[in-house]
Length: 411
Image 1 (cartoon, rainbow, N blue to C red):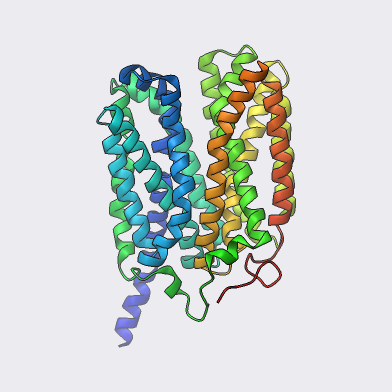
Image 2 (image 1 turned 120 degrees about the vertical axis):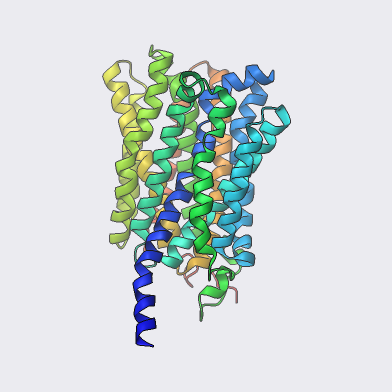
């Protein structure tokens, strides 16, 4: 009997290592299938013979899927458990990548929708898995997976054209390339299905299940949600329009594209460090304020001409956006008491967040068409940043979303 116990204890580090590896590989797949599309959109539009509006919808469709599926993902968790739901999400993502790359108009839109659905499921449930399996290391694990996610988001947008043009793969096989990440992720995740098939709500004995409705009545949950939503709004507006804004200051098209990649790579240290710091602090108000001030500095730099001012703006924006996404993901675990709450708060925050993200680029484009200047759009981004600071001050309080003070718990 003692020998059996020793064997089991020896297996624990290996299981933890495999779980961490699985989480990293899931995170690696949360953005490349989406961020790889933007640089290729001109090729896709010409090859398929579709309008600019239809081509733009290809980049918006995953965000719509995120908004809709983020609310359903916690239900999948209750039915099948977090681990099995993430596995299904990875399968759907892989299928979407393959279908999209067959090259017909219908396949491109169907595959893109499936990519959005698969990513949304894993996106929402990862914070719950971290909360459940690493309750004492939420900050560190959030750092690990959010940094992995952002690194490959930047890499995908940077290598899409080289894959399509330099390696003569064309846009279809350039998009298909990202199955190289999703297929290993499916295989590496399979061991997590063993012993974790029960719904997440049953994995927390002694803690009554909270209703989804009670979470939506929690003021603190709404502050976390608005922080998530506003940082998503700022990120996707920047990704969509930063090259155009830089070109309006005289920067070349090639240089403006590289600056977008630089902005994302600059964000990585802040993406990693912010959750670690947030987890060690009783409140995160100061972090939220600092992030907002850095973001405002980045926006201010875009009003100025001159290479030095623009590069400074890109660096500040990258730091702020890397820190803001990882803080938003950290708050999903820090403001909840268990994996069930974390999954529900993640669904709520990401549903609203990606709804705002889907509206943002279109709103800025419309505002530019109306004013023929980027300055009003930059003012709008500054106002969104101020609102994000206010939401972050509220979301940074050391309380739980379903405590008695913040909303009734429905038994």
